[in-house]
Image 1 (tube, rainbow, N blue to C red):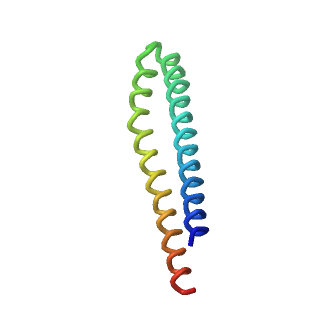
Image 2: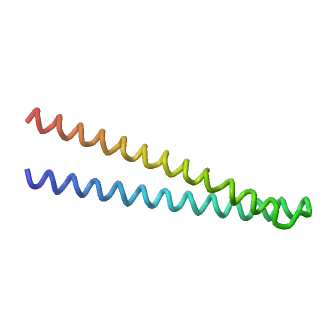
Length: 92
């Protein structure tokens, strides 16, 4: 019983680390795309900070939504694994 609890905590920790890594990388990609896309649009239209600031501000809710999607997907995987472990423990 103690081994399965320890294994479960290890899986939980691994999933949380993966989730944080995914959210961090996706947030970085969104910020970089906002900055470079905004600078490119500002250069084309001659409106120096307008598009850059607009895209950066638009990136905030996009980052939050992506964070929630990744977190929900990770929690669904965690629940699925916990249910499978319970079923395998009950059948043994």
